Length: 81
Image (cartoon, rainbow, N blue to C red; front, side):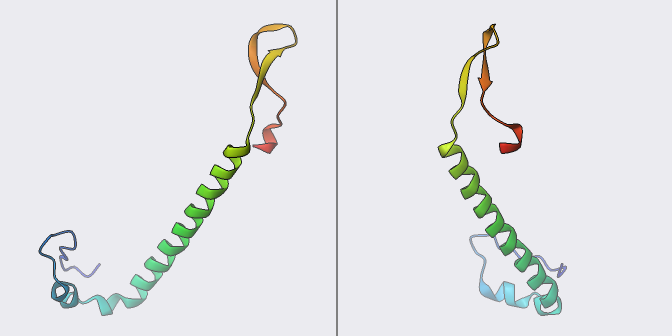
């Protein structure tokens, strides 16, 4: 974005290298990107919690069905999933 290489993953990275990049020229874009990333992180965290909570309580019933001698899942509605 700033067309300046910022070696943020280097062991020798120092703050002056970040400050030398013309990031203020892209302040609004950077704020939009970080706001979007924050929202995505919160959504992912909530979804992870909801999915984990659902599967911790979920029960799967397996038994023979209508004389078929092969175990089948029984007792659920696809819309519940």
